[in-house]
Length: 417
Image (cartoon, rainbow, N blue to C red):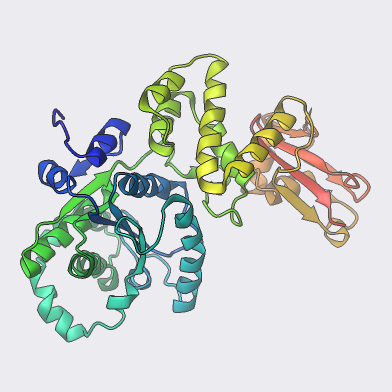
């Protein structure tokens, strides 16, 4: 793209690699020359924490605020009751209103670390779409809003087509999701003057729907901007690891494990991730990303420290790095490692090493743990673990033991006192 942006925000998004597509680059760029413009991203409360897959868009909101504009974080208290079907092969499990409220309370903690909330012109607002969705009158909504939607057009969206092409069921409940999300944009424009919705590229169809609806009902010009759906250079979906999702809440994933995820970044991704997930100057990100040999490991530590500082604070990042150095360089047992506490009753006459590997999160199943041992990928207190039938009793666990899967993943197992 040869477009040369005038606004700080679009310039940063382009330079750092955040942009996948925009409904009107020039129109949005011009609009963002006026400070204090509101933009939103929506987050459904399907879990008690967001994960690393959401972090790209949280960073977009952070940059948006740093450029003098007003981020709106929209919690999907209403839309979570329906469930976004975008690019999913099956319907999401429905949550109770209490579960949704509990999840929103947990998720809110993360946003406060990245955005400044308040009543000022550039302060972020935390909103919940249940405020306008829960009280909708169905017949009025169909008449006033539903008539603006073409079923033919909705069936043409890639996320819907893919589900139907596979002959996988798409419920009427889910089909309504894109109408509700479009209505969110209309309401946010009407109530707060919101001119922009941002999201991952899988949300393109939903975003365009909202723009079209707002133009038809209010005759207002608004915009949509999407970020790429990131995968790591080795093809894995961003935010997933062998142990499951990389959660942003410390009570669902320890800051050490979060730090370790970034420290284990593939060499080829370091420069790109520095630009997307930190605020370091682009030239420095490129310099660090171009390092080779053992020096790229130093760049990975810079990345892990910077991202962990934003999410969990500087102390947590420093503690994680100190633990990693103790574990990797000195062969010690770090205090911050993920820990499995076992009671004497659980151990009984003995507990199998395979069970310990699974319960400590180093493998998902017993079969996977046995394969790890067979392929010489497991270690017990830094010594090769070769016997999948090994049993450990209370005496063996009187002092903590360290389990390792490969060179980078470790956990402690100890007897709860």
